[in-house]
Length: 123
Image (cartoon, rainbow, N blue to C red):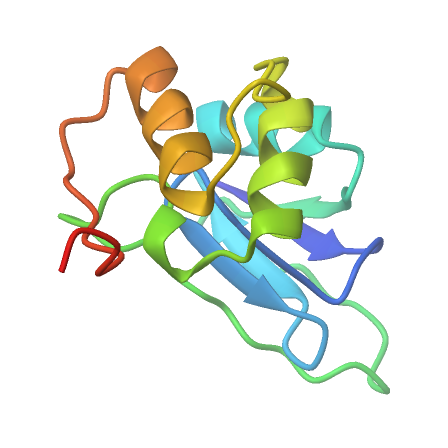
């Protein structure tokens, strides 16, 4: 397990993790940590092997466990700007998709997700 801190941005949702700047500390498996570090929004603050790694007392310790059965990304909760940023982080070109639904569908397609998102556009 690796302890990471969100150091860039106000929040992050991805790879089964949701983190906000008011609770920037997250403890994740090494494979997830590698993916989060690749976004350049996190910094390693320690490895956990049976005990908590000490850090500055001025920072509250909050550990956010990734959800067990939740999809890796809450695409339906993201704004268009967040979808575009997330796609850019993953190297997915969604510039040709016009609507939020199309952008989310393209990301889902590339990631192999089978979640259906209802944006109410066909009502």
